[in-house]
Image (cartoon, rainbow, N blue to C red):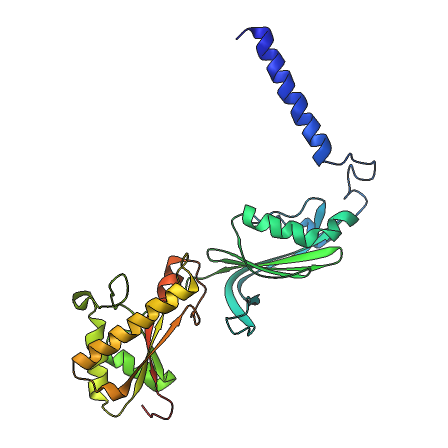
Length: 297
């Protein structure tokens, strides 16, 4: 390629880029060239740095900030399958920023712009209520955004990772049943379709059997739960039906009276936590023993 032709191509690219910018970006008026110049910063704002995990909207300025080492924030979540409101309390290191939107057109579109910015920065929107409230999450970072007129604020909590110690023996099952009338059982390995149990890798079932044989007067419901990240709700419901039946069949085959046992599939209906991280997915996929109402542990 000749030097003159190369220069011509580069010039064409530059011109097309400038033309696109002219369409996408409005020409600044004298007042817009420095929209924050006429607004004096507060002493508090002078000490506030931008959030590292979430940038502020263009033409907005920080008006105040707060921080703390161990602060709790309650964030709204999407309603459950029955339409009941849900919320979550998150504790951890805390950052707060209040922003003022300088331009009127930015105020009008602030909610939509924030909704677009969140996935671009790696956040998952867990709940939104236009035009005022957004809950978002990125791994162990939770964010609550409130929008009101020319202001919006961001509460950011980096949650401490919770310890998780699933039940390992009959004594643990007994403690949970006495305290909560139910116990979550992890570690039962099923066939891909859920019809059968891999006994060799399901040692916890022996502890379930031990508990039930030590308490022969108890009747329990064997609940099954699963929340696939990609699967359909009806598919998870069917798999949990097969799993619950498989557990009941195994217990009956090992000496538990059939009349003491009921099976109940729940599919995705009752997660114990969010379903975003590998640990949460693992916690949601479980078998639970629940006392039949009227039974005393």
